[in-house]
Image 1 (cartoon, rainbow, N blue to C red):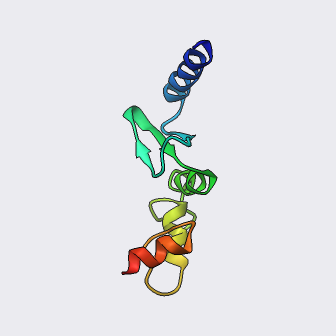
Image 2 (image 1 turned 45 degrees about the vertical axis):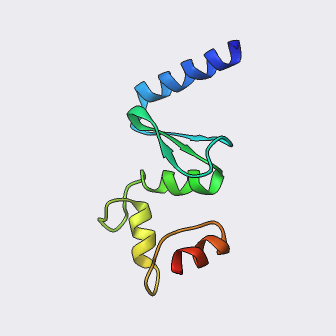
Length: 91
């Protein structure tokens, strides 16, 4: 129980100091946004995607992620770490 209380205190401290806090959690199978900029993601891939949405654009877009998506050729439906997810999104 002490570990959980320590974890909650660390999250509260991070929320006070940062606009967005990204937590990798095996309890969440997709992105989940909790209160006050706390975002839970299922793995490091999605943590990187979430982080890229917070980083400044080098082209004047909303974010670095917007730069990445705009630089891709063709129509971008979305991003996914798994090929199966992409085929599901297209059907």
